[in-house]
Each structure stands twice: as structure tokens, then as C-alpha cells.
Image (cartoon, rainbow, N blue to C red; front, side):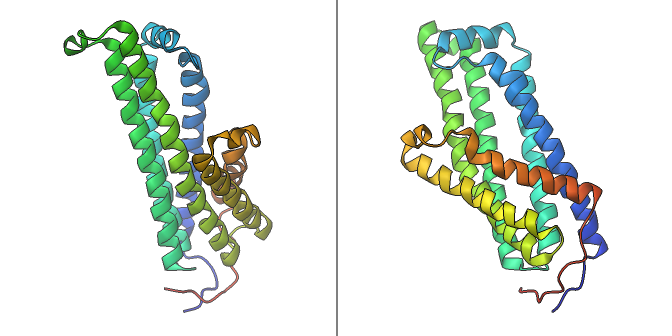
Length: 240
């Protein structure tokens, strides 16, 4: 089977994918910089506990936003599968599965936030523990989210690498953008994998540089899909 261009379902999916990513990007930036950076004090569980309890209403907002972010990721991966399935169904499915694992890691991170809030609010059955111990346990729950994020990032970056390859083969977006996506995503996956094995890797490469290039690619692609739509394609033979 040979394709010469995109059909209406793919063009609709392109707009959905672009919008879903832009919404998810806005949400994660708001949560990270508007809430988490405001509430979580690195290396100081007691101050973190005081900050969270002083702004108790903000924490549930961050949880709700994280859940919306997870839904947006699922919407995006579904739309991308619809777009890229005609290029290579197996690889498109593999990419969708990788993004799904990334979304599941975010769900686990959100559950950790519930645990941290429960510990800090001090339910009756937790009164047997000292306040300092509860604060330490809450900080442990928050720290676990850090590990889960980078496990999820590995799968998300690998999925994006596959998507970048399919974008390049399809001709639906500029080849230079697709090639950058392959390189940026593979870089993120490689850095994350090394970091998981050797945490001191951050002395060589800052954590921000793991996913920033990948984020730039996905942001640029989302704007392209939303405002320019899909290109005519290369007319390549598909694989099922």
C-alpha cells in the first residue's frame, strides 16, 4: 500500500495532537514553576512541610493539574498513532506504548503527592509518629516522584525518537525538524539511561539538558501541526 498524502482523519488528529501537547506543556510549566518550586524546599523536609501546609489549597490544584496532564498525554499519543500508523503500524504502536508508560509514571508521581499530603495532614492513625518522622516520610514520597519521572522520561524519549523517525519518513513535517527530533529525543533517552545507572552523571550534564531539546522539538512540532497542518507526504510505501 502506498500513500500520497494525509486523509481527513489524520489532519484532524494532527490538530488534536498539537493542541493536546500545548495544553499539557502549559500545565506542566504552571505546576512546576508556579506550585512545586514555590512549595518544595530541597534538602529541608521541615520547611517543605510548613510551606505545603501554609498553602494547602495549592497542593490539590497541582494534583488535579497532573491528572489533566496525564489525560492530555493519552490524547496526544492516540492522535499521533492515527497520524503515523499509515507509515509503519508496528513502530507507531511501539511509540504509543512508550508514551503510555510515560503517562503511567506521571500517574504514579501523582499518587505520591496524595501520600505526601496525607502524611503532612496527620490523620488520627498517624499520631503514633513524631512530626519530624512524618515530614521525612512525606519528603521521601516527593523524592520518589523524581525517580519515577526519569524512568518515565526514558520511555517517553524513546517513543519520541521513533516518532521522529516516522515523521522523517512521512514528509508530513519539515525534514529538518523531524531529524532534529530524532537527535534530540535520542539524546534525552541516552542521558536518562546513563543517569539511572550512574546518578553522578549530572556532574557532566545538567538535568535540564536531558529533556529540554526533546521539549523544544515537541513544542515546535505541535505549533506546526496546529497552525500549518500535515504536509503532502513523500508517497512512501507503508508497512503493516
